[in-house]
Image 1: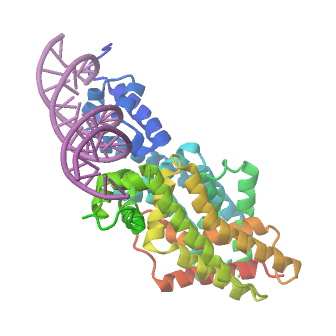
Image 2: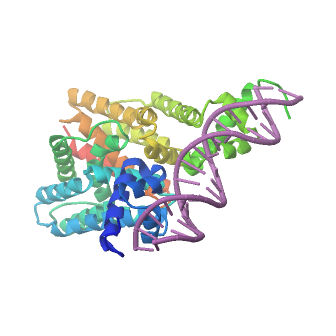
Image 3: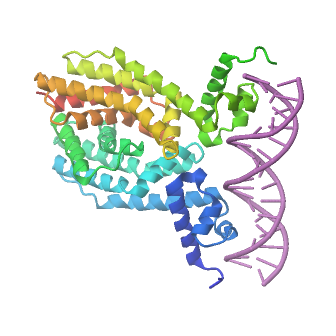
Length: 200
Length: 200
DNA sequence: GTCTATATGAAGATAGAC
DNA sequence: GTCTATCTTCATATAGAC
């Protein structure tokens, strides 16, 4: 029952079990007992690796944020606004649409008062990166005369809001996640709206 | 200490104290002891009026939803899209911008798995009413040839998303609430975007 | 109906053996 | 480092007197 003292892999096992538990039932309802059981490890071992429930939760969130922030390096900009915006939109959609990400943002928003810095980290790793990326692009194209955007910051945020709107009712537990076709319609509609409204 | 047996006003006192407590610290962290103390009532009295913590919470949410749903009766439609959309936008903004409503949607989203029907009630009383109102208006104006909206349902949801986007980072604990001037900018930008993109 | 006092159980965290 | 067993706290809910 004790294959090797100081097993570094055990930390990963615990973190994995904890992530699953947190994402399934939320921070409050996830007990350290249940996490230890799921990891097939004693509770004390959990406490040896992570000093408290809060630290364990923070480790989970940080891991998830690192994944997101690296996704945007592949986004390429060119002078075709519709094409570029559509590319960004797809990246963003794929970034937020997994079941795990849905749970994560719901739980983080819920726990924002208790973990203000974690909520900030998440927002800055996801939505904020997207928004800045779009805003920079709109500014650039306006400077070049390809587009005409008076307020790139707000427009970027609202483009982002148009995309997120197709997930809002899912986050509220209203409906199952939208199919890929429906997501595509939201992207098309948003891109077309920007393209028409910001024509130079 | 017992002014009149069966005091109906006491129920309101309890409900008020409970609402305040729930909105301040969330469902989990609000203890029945604290609520009873805040209402200057014994805990047992709370249980006499509301059978359980869940029922007390539900009563609070339902009250808040009733307020919202009645706000939209005053919205008037006419054939000037920019003016009408701006009116709707203002109504919506004033509906969601109070500190209480911010807390409520955060808490409800957090507790959506535990109270699925309450989350639904909230969404249907607020966002859904707004969305349907906008969608109907866009359809109507398209039929009359004033606007040209191919997909009123999605466009309405995205108009809504554009407005909500100015509250998102607040909900994430990133920033203090936007000033009235900033809200106005979001409204202007959103209305202008629809107006340009949906010109007949 | 309202109060004081208590039962019951769950969960975070720790002590001490190996 | 890991395990079993335990401590402590606190919150929901109830019992019984007035």
